[in-house]
Image (tube, rainbow, N blue to C red; front, side, top):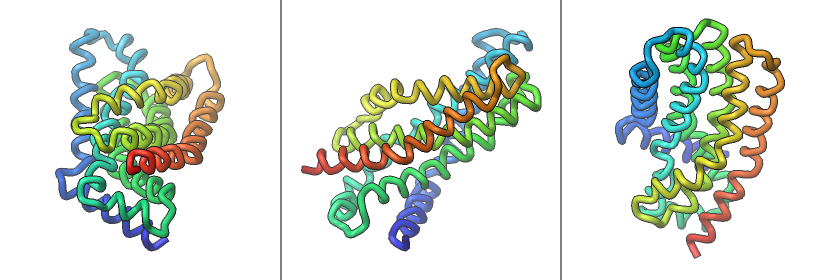
Length: 222
């Protein structure tokens, strides 16, 4: 566990040193949420209805920020070769780096969602639902994004290609995340049904995505 904890602390320090992934993600989140009323109009009922979906879409796009650099910096300085040749399984290395990225990016987004949701006329129940669903669903976004980051690690400016690879895979997370958030706000569907599926997707991503990303890293390293 010591190498993994050291890697986690290293990635957290790098995230703070290069300008703060948390700050960048939250600012991007704020910008996207702020322009929604200008695009759809100031109708409070309309904003309240589309609020959970807009918060989830903004969180998805903000999570993608920096994912293309998840492994590229290690590939450029030779650390990735050491990870592949080291005694620590590469799958655990991928999981540790994903955990650091989620703490630096996904967690601040989930914590900022209730405050930004007020701009979209969200009530207390809806704000709580969005926060809980983001806490449960954003780890899956990071883990799925790690596969795209690993597949494009050797490409310069591979961020666009990574987004094209990752976005279709994140659609189930987006669907059940929005459905659970809307159910918490008083929808016709019970909250437990979509939220359980969302948690299952995150757990399945935790079980499968590190192996897929590690296999992609080994393939591109050959």
